[in-house]
Image (cartoon, rainbow, N blue to C red; front, side, top):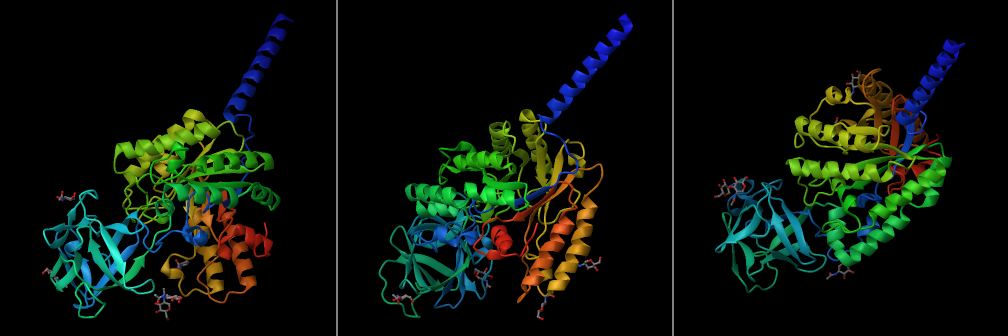
Length: 507
Ligand SMILES: *[C@@H]1O[C@H](CO)[C@@H](O)[C@H](O)[C@H]1NC(C)=O
Ligand SMILES: *[C@@H]1O[C@H](CO)[C@@H](O)[C@H](O)[C@H]1NC(C)=O
Ligand SMILES: *[C@@H]1O[C@H](CO)[C@@H](O)[C@H](O)[C@H]1NC(C)=O
Ligand SMILES: *[C@@H]1O[C@H](CO)[C@@H](O)[C@H](O)[C@H]1NC(C)=O
Ligand SMILES: *[C@@H]1O[C@H](CO)[C@@H](O)[C@H](O)[C@H]1NC(C)=O
């Protein structure tokens, strides 16, 4: 009798302990190994990308000249391009017959009419006496310039230094700033250059610095409160999706007073997303899309001028880990927090495998400090890299996920592919790529970005439907799930809302 009741008690205690363990492991959330994320990216919302909503940039004064714009200047007298000789570190010349890296000057916008010029090797343009040089590594020591256009529509310009002197290509090898009186726009005038805009960036740095602090705060607030609204979450939940991936920028962690030039308010928008997700039963993957210094030099990581400077110091990595820690802590009690993606699309070789491993380990620990259940997503590197290079790290981490992005667009190998070839590529090549990284005991796999668009010209609606269906079928094999890029987009095939409403995609 005694023994029996003790046994029962022990058994009962064990049961309670087991139950508590399961509860503590799951935070009350059931673990369902069959669950797959079917998500859409809320891209272009809390991280700006001009191509997704071009009108956002419309009202910026002098909007051709935003940070990072790549300008090229052809002298009307030498008929050659202005060039930072050797890419920088010495004089400027005007002797290059075609323009690429060394002949491209990246703007730093001081205000709507004042700029600094950064050259290929990252020096800034300045003056050494009358000679124009690119030797200073420090923007502060560099010269500021005005770009004077012949008229609003003209591509002919003069470049005026802050001392009032205009640059001139005296000869192919002598570029000076030593003339203050100019007249007309004749083609024998060495102060006149024909300007080409070879690159433009339209990310968060450009929009906030372009509008300036007061106007930017208003423009961004209006955008954040209108681009994605509660009804979108309702629509997403009712159309066969179960999650959203939300790109955020590192400055969100210092809301409401982020460092210049960023403006506050994106955190409030993310708070809204979490309350709407909870209401409509959607999961959220927070995705750090823009890290301090830029992890890839693209506008969507908020680079100022195309430079990629993330991960180059321990302080920079720690600052990024702190952002992850802040976001996890803030939302860990919300049942919708499903995953934290530590960094979107780090680019090799600028970001080395050693650096990314170090950061991913520290970022993983930061998430785990606040949550035992949140999935931790690690994006594979773009550029030269191996699809399984993160496995040695990820294999040892619970609930880790590898994110891969599959687009049939950016690589030139898709240039001449027909619709059918694209579809075959999904069933054959993508499927084996995904298969290769999807293992039974390794990290889960996530196709965190894809789109039903391609380079095919004159594709029919039915072609698009088959392409979308193929991707949903193949990416459905990813063990964590997939996420379409994006929900709203001025380019209609990149808007899942439009694709669903117009019968291009069925879930
Ligand atoms: C600028 O930086 C480069 C590379 O770090 C260095 O070699 C060069 O000496 C620096 N130039 C000046 C003027 O400090
Ligand atoms: C520039 O182009 C616009 C539109 O074509 C025209 O209305 C305007 O008069 C032009 N301005 C000048 C200075 O030529
Ligand atoms: C341009 O001028 C520089 C300076 O004299 C010279 O070193 C360089 O070789 C020239 N480049 C071309 C393409 O002529
Ligand atoms: C695509 O076709 C064009 C024109 O025939 C050709 O020049 C180009 O090399 C092709 N591109 C690829 C990736 O095959
Ligand atoms: C796709 O896979 C097939 C079969 O393995 C291969 O022959 C082909 O080169 C691949 N295509 C591309 C564009 O990688």
